[in-house]
Length: 441
Image 1: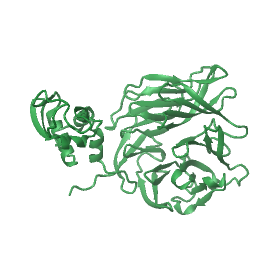
Image 2 (image 1 turned 180 degrees about the horizontal axis):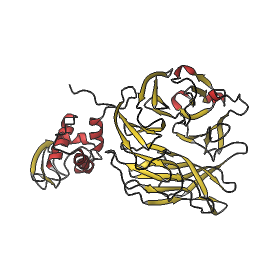
Image 3 (image 1 turned 90 degrees about the vertical axis):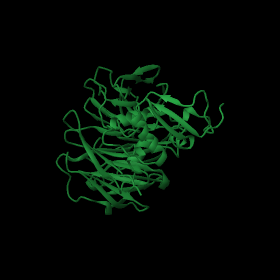
Image 4 (image 1 turned 60 degrees about the vertical axis):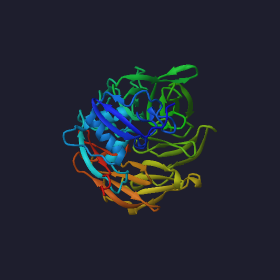
């Protein structure tokens, strides 16, 4: 172990730099520079007076200034793609993103740009990636974009209809698809986000036999690396399957109770605080709505609600649902963007509808895109036609509205990597919304 030496010299591509270990410590333990020091940020070797790095010196200067000041300045002669490539090498991409965009806030989001997809027609889903990129599913294709919004090789399922897609991490995408009758080729598989190549196919085993099945909605547990998916097979394997993200093996299956609906679920959501899974089957997939919380430890349905027996009015038909753990509520939305709330402590009570949030009166368009919900950073988001509403505070007051008319109605949206992505119904156009950085003082 070397003697502590705060001043450090670098030779980067023939250009010399001098800095301190205090500045480099701002890069974080998981960065390129973190690997050069011990746990106290002392240099691990003093074999030379300087460290040589065979990389671009101009980009190194920008990144070093970012570590010194926390501010990002990119000269006009430096392509952003080049800087991002170098930032990835040094493990500083998060620092660049943080400096380029402010902390996510739905009330401060500003339209950044639109991206037109590679194929016409309605999209199935858009999912924000953890690193600021996204993927768009439509038909039998998934188009994957990095955080520079440059497209990677697409994922193709050879004319199988894709139901859902989700990110395991920034390099791995999971896709669910319908089984084609007599082909046995549906189900769920894991793909490389950068190459589009299949890495693993997830199986459903029942009575010591591998079954053909259709996989639907997805959810993930980051604590114990589990994948959840709604499944429906040809016989009695209807319900929710659970797989290990690392090994790919099926580790559990919750079979659909008689008189309930799990295999056709539109929405799954893992609740970190309760170790339960929200399962929601909604209009128009089913004539009735079914929402439940499943506890896989006890193999029990600990909370459930259905509108069976309730008055069949269009104003009350649930189109999406999301659990709000901090307030012990499930929020639902109907096709007129009325928000409804159900108390999880009431044991499947009635919906408390809140019409003050309604932004549109009258009937839906001839080809509607049903409202979707998202909860992020303590704010509630709801899409409606060509806009997204933001609700804040304990009473969920409407505080902002995001709207772009180009592309038609919003059929799906997703939040992640400090961005909001909104997929429009026409020609796969999606918008990117970002929070601008605070002004430099």
